Length: 182
Image (cartoon, rainbow, N blue to C red; front, side):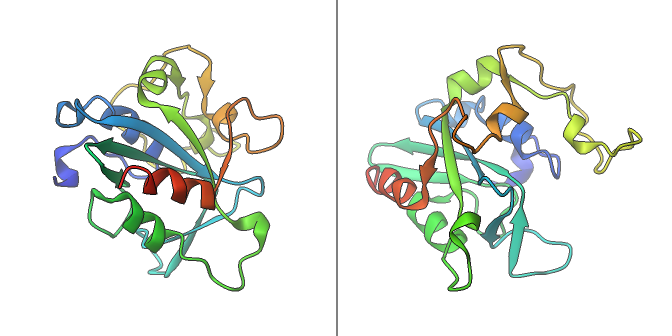
């Protein structure tokens, strides 16, 4: 699969993945939308597209798709420089390879949302991509904003504190989840 086959808009990963969840090529797959962040909103990712060419990109959050079928799992990350899709374990091992200087607070945490729930409930008003004067920080997608009004807003998904409504997984738990699917 080529990224150009999918709807993609730079810096709108949550909407890119929302559209990907509907792709007929993934119809037979079990799909989970993975919200990746942490309570510090400063999470390291390797092998990410970077205008600076840095080895590690520190995202405040990122959204990827975990898809599994018949003892195989794949991660779809349109902002990765690794192949898309990539086996789930290879993606996790390469992207989150721990650096000895990373503090515990910066390690990635994950929320796993069933794709159907994400499709039915996600809403994005894109306000997080505007500055205090209302100017776009990044060119918005050409498609209309996603507004399902089902209560699954981006700010609630990005709550990685104890008050989060969704379960938060640590990196070792994510590795175990991916490993369970081969």
